[in-house]
Length: 223
Length: 223
DNA sequence: GCCGTTTCGATATTCTTTTATCGGTATAAA
DNA sequence: TTTATACCGATAAAAGAATATCGAAACGGC
Image (cartoon, rainbow over the protein chains, first blue to last red):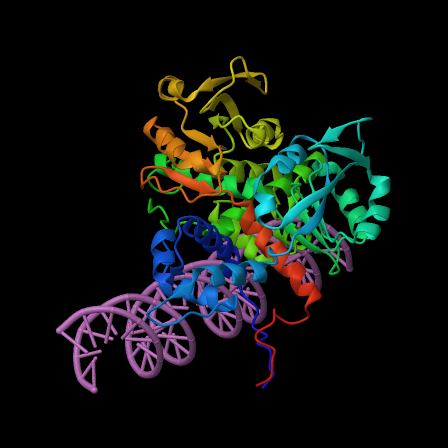
């Protein structure tokens, strides 16, 4: 039967795939050729069943007693994530954050290349990562000609919405939003949010819970 | 009764608190004094019940028909997250990422101040964010004297484990890890991971799913 | 002063995610 | 050839989180 399994992978599973992939790359560099999900689970502190389910959801298939072929599993995961053939992205925002993103070495490994840098107010002659910083007015034209689908939004919060709408209008289909703001650009555009404050909230609350043995003070004054 | 409710807040709830807080700050700037969780929910695309539960878990209490006092709710959330009194943090790693973090304007708003910058191999005379870049050898001494509890780890992956262990050994109780590596430093140290690859995985898969209407090819060849 | 409306607070249900269990298969050793 | 072992795959149970429903309280209008 040709029934495509419509059960999409869950977001938590999806977020774990890069962890597997990273471990696989490490092991591949060490010369290993076979892996079992038990090893993956032990190394990452997960349950082995969970790892198996994640890999299965990504389309990987292993063999009993043998495990998975490392090279094949790596390729399957990379293909599933779309990290196998280099995708091109525009960076919008040439401030400190944008500069850090350009310098981040991890993009190339995930098949992502920043091919142009834009800014709402580019300083004349400014260069970021060896590329000229272009004004936003050129974004739509270049996006159409270069067939770029992904935009990285790294402008301050007060400019994020307008800039995001401009990016969506330019035809970008996915926006990786680093601004601390919920972008709502309609169903046509996939927006993924990176919010440091959320991560910090978890950390600082757990840190605070270390000091206060029980939960934070709940009106500790006696009546 | 003095029974402290031991039911800890869930991580998803915890991660939503900064979103509420951000909205509250915006509304406060607009002069509003009362908020209802219905408004919060509508603006964020959540369910109102969920917002109420989150706020209740943080210790906030409102009044029927009135809602929550904006100022009070903001203070409660900030206190719950430990963002009310300025905490001090060490930044370890003076590379591009570290420089971006120093320049990030959001830390101060969350009660976090980077008071010193370290690096495994500081360039002589290097300055980051107006502060001298110190060698790691000075970390333990300074951490003890300044009573700093939190460290931001922003070194390359291959140095992350050793550096993290050094930070733990210096007495830091929380580590915000920006290196693409799972740090396991024992139960004494709270480690919160920031992994861009996880976020990118969600984005690129959803982007890939846009092109391929159904899930990625699952041996589409007929037998 | 009464009533309708709005909103909090608590409970219940449904859904998702995680964890546990069982059966089957392929390899290697005896 | 037989047997033991390690591992995948599928199913089932448990835990957790999101959503829906109901009652109670307070303000504004009548």
